[in-house]
Image 1 (cartoon, helix red, strand yellow):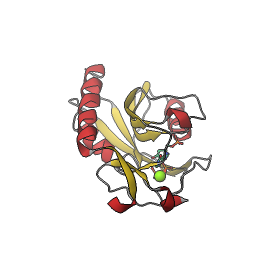
Image 2 (cartoon, protein in one colour):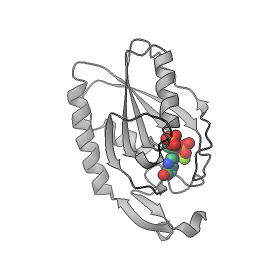
Image 3 (cartoon, rainbow, N blue to C red):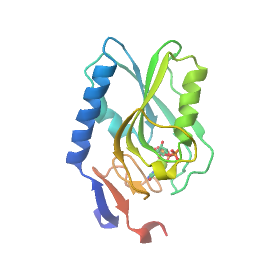
Image 4 (cartoon, rainbow, N blue to C red):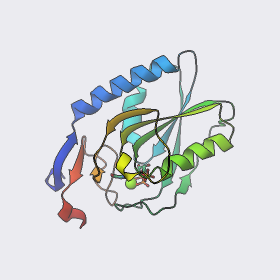
Length: 178
Ligand SMILES: O=P(O)(O)OC[C@H]1O[C@H](OP(=O)(O)OP(=O)(O)O)[C@H](O)[C@@H]1O
Ligand code: HPA
Ligand SMILES: [Mg+2]
């Protein structure tokens, strides 16, 4: 797998440090509350398990599976709800955990869904933000890294469903997807 990577952007150490930093901020901001942490599958799986263990609060956890890239390097423009979460969000404080905010379509879809379901508050924590990709006006409240305008893989992020299990985030060699 490593042979397909042109460069490593964020090492395991970088990711660990950023999870600790974000966990501390979230712990402080949500003091006295019991948020529902909503992990956006599949990409956010590794980031979720690492960051929640840095949050020193009572939290509930749930999962929502949405998809719009279908393994490719560009958003299809439509967000499909693959599997809905099970929790009742009405009146609850929702913290969405994402791996990356790129066009913003996925995030807007989920935030709107939580608001329609009468959440008390909705905030977003993302490992990575790619502001150059943005199509919709939406931003995360907690951001680990601001990434350059490149297609990144690893630590949950895929190309054709591969590379999710790389322990770091990197940029694929162009010949892999061109
Ligand atoms: O801001 P956007 O342009 O919407 O892109 C961000 C979303 O795209 C990816 O999901 P994808 O559709 O690839 O599904 P996956 O998580 O199952 O890989 C990623 O995990 C984010 O959820
Ligand atoms: O850069 C990316 N890599 C992998 N999946 C993605 N989904 C949105 N942007 C990306
Ligand atoms: Mg994907």
